[in-house]
Length: 289
Length: 289
Image 1 (cartoon, helix red, strand yellow):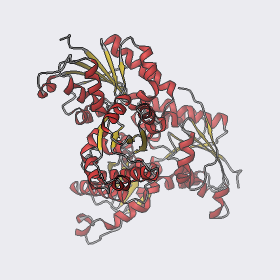
Image 2 (cartoon, rainbow over the protein chains, first blue to last red):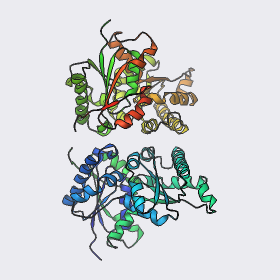
Image 3 (cartoon, one colour):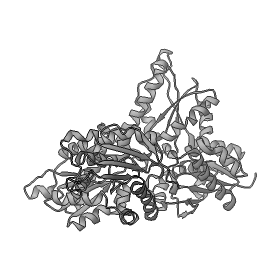
Image 4 (tube, rainbow over the protein chains, first blue to last red):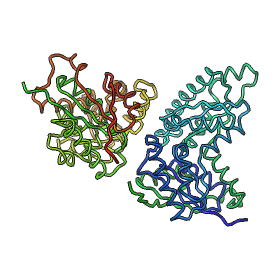
């Protein structure tokens, strides 16, 4: 077995801690360094050039100063707009969240029709539609701008959140049917959404089945693809088992170091919900600008 | 009557268009120039120094390049953190939204106990508590982070929004009672909230009365103070009737010019809801940074 690697994980905020969590579960023996560029979020309203510059600065910090041998871009906007620029900025492999999500959707889908829930910025980039298209899938994307604020308010099991999810999923399924799609897979295209997976699955069970599916006599369950999980699986495959732990409980001891460029307090307060364990002391990082 | 003035109105986003709307209704003969610093929002997560620098740049543009003789800071965060710095940066009078809201609360409240709904950043600044305290009022502030996203999603009359308002107001009233306050006035401390006034008033009518109020035999209605309205009234008083129109219908013709530093598309799409009329062509403004 190779030496356990140092893996750098980058997000504009702290939603990417759901990806870090999935990574520690798959590779508990690795050492992880996380940067949340909280001073400059949201990336979603910024230009491609600005996002690329910001993300490259964080990537260089992770590689040059923290010794990361591999980078995971745990941020949909940066993955959509700046993956090439980050790859150019550092001499190590770089993995985004969108491609692994699309690949997992291809493995999961029998019909080839896929639904994607994401933020407004990610939907406007059409990055999932493009990545799914490259996998031979048809994708219908839906912007769900209320879900991130609901997660950050801590309402992951609130009746209000269930109703909001029901509205968004109902509209998404109706649009898919209007285009005669027969979707059997739902991609959670935002790093905040894994915390909503239980309520999303509950709502999916209660929604009427697609008439397109019924016509063919196979009312099927919708498979839910969590791109945080898919990204961690892709990362573990790249390392070919290095840093895989002896048992599932090993990740609680995995070494994690967290940096944020601002809002250390909010990061510490909310981060543990996303990471599934205390984030510990978050260090303030000054990237300028 | 004096000549109709040119009034500059500034916000970090487009929520301040509710203040502009109230201003045009009070002073339909004035000329208005609005700047939304959308490229650099949200201000709420930024330091006092950064907010002061950003706001001063917009203020100088409005005064030097657009000839504003008077500035209204239609942004709670900038009013809370940077009113002095803006005043220092320009040679014209500057009015924020917080002081007029607190003054209106003093005129409205019989008990001297006031509730404030606002964003997380405004509550953390405690600017309303301080301004209300200066008026001899006791204020209890509540962060309501879901309300801005709900307004921006256009769900101003949605059952979900009514339920969210019910949760927030219920928690706020319970906290006020736990401190033995007898609140009779509610201040809407965010420029997005005037769009929620109907649902907030409906929820207030349905909530149980304060036992503190009941004990004293006067179950009273809660007065709602909209700081956009209060700010427009304060501005009109400062101009002593100049630019007041002949009738209430005059404001639809009031001259308005809008600039945004980014997201012109979102500004144009959502802005008319806040302004109550089409915002027209929004001009892109480059303030650097």
